[in-house]
Length: 176
Image 1 (cartoon, rainbow, N blue to C red):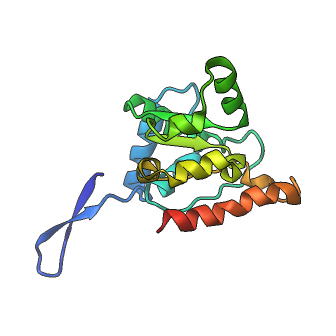
Image 2: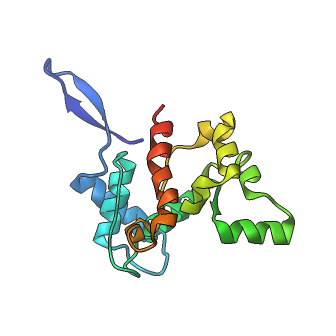
């Protein structure tokens, strides 16, 4: 993590954690995201959201469909791949496809090798996700959690809200 220098009360130089949610941090983040060459320029709100996330601030982005909310994950994932960080996406579709094509259980794989797992919200209530959270290796490697489509909480009805309720439990557990 970059650091900045500051002066303490005695005039000595101290090292401060770099803040992404500053003009300098914003410019650096914009430069990094633009250098990814994903075929489109990041929106200002995406850069701001990535900066907030990098500073450890919880983020909830509510924007219209097609405006780039999923870009938050794409930007992080693309940067991770460029740095040779292994990640996997786990949702109902990828779990089914991995099992159908390779007889692979993605949550079992997630417990052994990736640095980052990006999971669909419906995975929070699965037994396999619970097993992963109880695995000391997986739990130790987990540094952040993101959820897509939160803006549809009121639209999807009470049955899907059970999955959303797990977000609070997971956040609490991650802070232990």
